[in-house]
Image 1 (cartoon, rainbow, N blue to C red):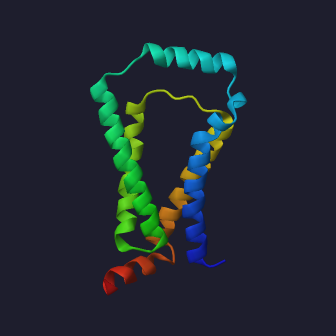
Image 2 (image 1 turned 30 degrees about the vertical axis):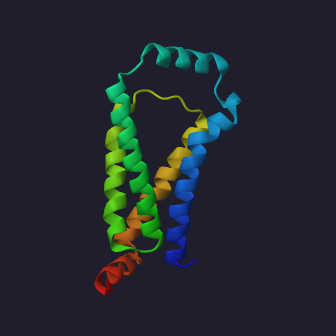
Length: 143
């Protein structure tokens, strides 16, 4: 398998694993024990955030989602801007985690999310340091 194919596989698989990891516990509710889920729901209901906080996190989430999808498409097409966009969207996403508060995921969902992050990191590393980096640089020269 050539580097470009492997790179594209990592990018697509990363997004697929992230989506599956995010929604797995909703698709298969039994993965989280009922007592634990009930306690989490009760705790989150007691900690109701302000409307401005919800709106700010919603706006940030929308920016991150749009940026991530644009970065992914750009990476798949070897657009020169996609490397820095994908890198900085990833950094911004990581920096937003503390503001999201506690979350509850099953081990399976966590595993899929971790695999997604590893694949995304591998794809970014390939884009900057692998053999395919010239495809991004060539694209910026010909633009």
